[in-house]
Image (cartoon, rainbow, N blue to C red; front, side, top):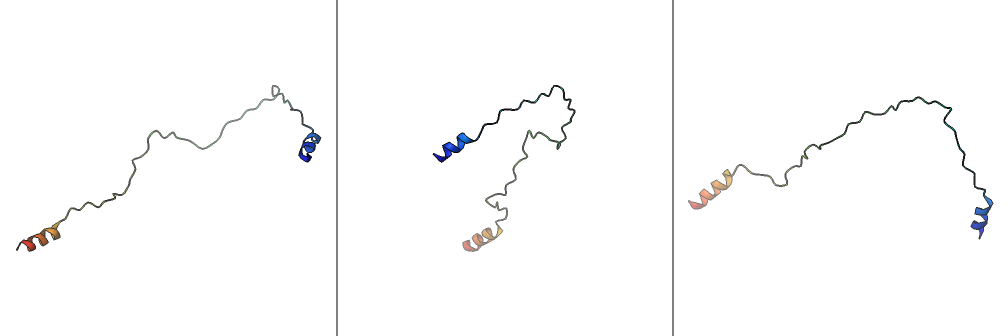
Length: 67
């Protein structure tokens, strides 16, 4: 009930009209220089599995096991 009475007590301001026909405004838009990115660079992700290139120890162990 109190909110209803409070809402009724506050008058609503009428909209204000501003005539800009008589005002001349000259301006430029200064801002940061922008570039459109059309393509993303390739993603560099470290490999999850280390690829081995040297198996000498395993070959030596295998040769010793055969002897």
